[in-house]
Length: 512
Image: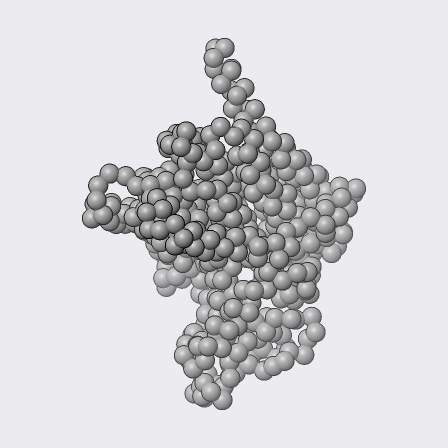
């Protein structure tokens, strides 16, 4: 018994710094829940809650988040949702810390405080970010999506070489993320790339051919596990709507993306598609995004064909998108690159619209928290799902404290740019070092215990979460937040030297 208590004490002391950070993060969330006891609604929230009440796949959004809401419904309504999303935010920070601490501990087994300090510094932008705190109160799928993506990366990177069960678990979690937000669907490609790099460079017995075979089997397991939730959801969707997919109007948002550059003089659409030729600029000064202007402004061409969810809208939008991107591929890439770079800009301009940007700040009062565009439906659905907990309340002075915190302590865009550049600079520096010291030193740097695969996986995942929304819909500040934990992880792993100390060559395998 004494030995066990002693081991627990050493473990607690080993993570004492992080315990302080985690306690501060938990306290912050308790204060936020005291100031805002219920969820904060956006335009998408109505769709999610309606799908949760009926347990049917939503026509406009993937159904992973409504399934979570349905599971939590017996647990005191929206109070449980607030608590669950806060726990997800805390666990996301814990996963970032654990991965960094484990890698740093393997590299510096005799440096007691250094792994703790690096792990804490990496987790702080995740655990104590004001915008992330507000995201946990929004009744949208993003917090669940971010948690599932980070869980998939954690399982994937935890052991080297990657066991097949880890690859399968990572694929399964990534598949769950894909049915939570459609932008998660291409993330399986990042997992496959990471598995291939880690499989070929990750050490282990056997020659190159055996490594390639093992890597191929591991990739097959990951892809197969990914397809389980994806195909299951698509079959469920088909049983309700008679078509295979995640939603019935996905092409409409991609049309909005092309509306930012589409030139009908170059596209030369037929008479049936010419109705979708966009008009620019929008007359509504509250709409900064050409995507939202093309879909929701008074000039939107969808008003002439029955609205964005009309019976012909998705088919016409799909055909227009194909014609626009085929005729103007460079313009499409330019628009995607420009909107991706918005994530790194300083300041927070009201984009995509002024009312959308306002939803990403803790409200001053319950009246301003109400989604006025769907006030009646919101009130009815909130009462049906959460009863008394569905009433939006703003409790002072806690709400005032949380608003002030978010206004001052959120990760700025230039800081995210630095995090994304650190791995790029690190790779360039290591290549230069290999050229300087010759191929033998380079082989040692790439072999056995290297973490190039881990850095690549985390960095590509963060980059994908920034690029895919800009390529498929539009830039939105909310879409940037799931990329921050992965950007922090990639930067921290880059700063840790690749090989273990000579005094403890097996530290990487034994850490943790």
